[in-house]
Image (tube, rainbow, N blue to C red; front, top):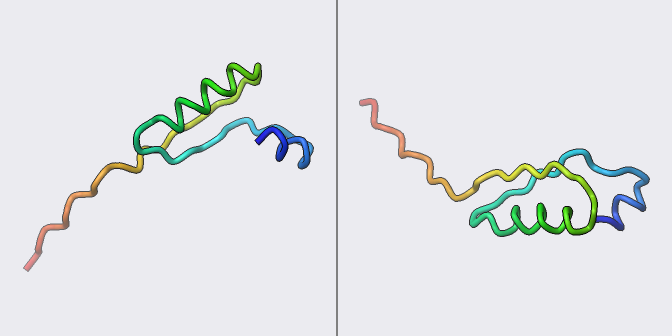
Length: 57
């Protein structure tokens, strides 16, 4: 990501990541903090199962 930001000439204010077990989200937060770069990482939970629709007839 650092290389992409450098190549494009800007840094992202927010990073949105799809997560299921939260490890990717946590890894990105820790990695950015360790690298000394402040980033807002938003994780979207993709593990939910939507309820089945009820029959109307």
